[in-house]
Image 1 (spheres, rainbow, N blue to C red):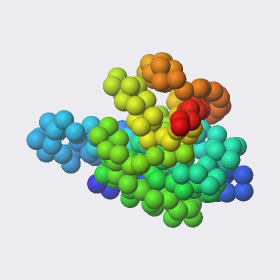
Image 2: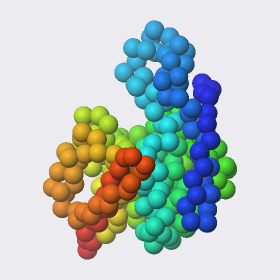
Image 3: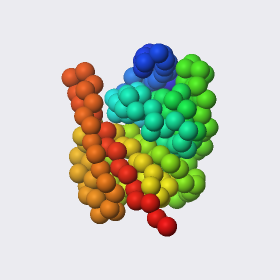
Length: 218
């Protein structure tokens, strides 16, 4: 599937990031539906083919801004992004000196992510990952943006973030205030991780960036 795209440019400090994104989500969904056979439309995994990944979401940009203001969070650290979509936070983390692994389950994400790395002249590894079922090791920093948009996500996302982070590591999550954010925060509280939050103004809207610190273990 070849979607129509648009170029976004964002400057953070002295670095210009160039993000190629899908031009219009509704247009892209229409194109996808026209391409699917009736059998494919009945596939329970069909929603995973939806081109939500290709939009430059505000929460992704907010997390990139948060990282750019705190380079010590990722410099010299191993970093994992879950459900990356276009991967803007991963590109920022890589520019700041992180050893980054970017992951998503959508089959088209790698193409867009690697293209944007070339546009922005940064380098990061990519792996297709179903974080509900698969492992990828342990990381100093695990992050995600706008990944709480389904009813099953709060617990799933909390478990995944905790599964992949090293003891004493950091978990970063940005969210525009979706309905399931409260349930996610409850799950993280039950896990015993400490929490701080910052509100990032994004034009007329605000995104929340949560930073969780896990405990060291012997």
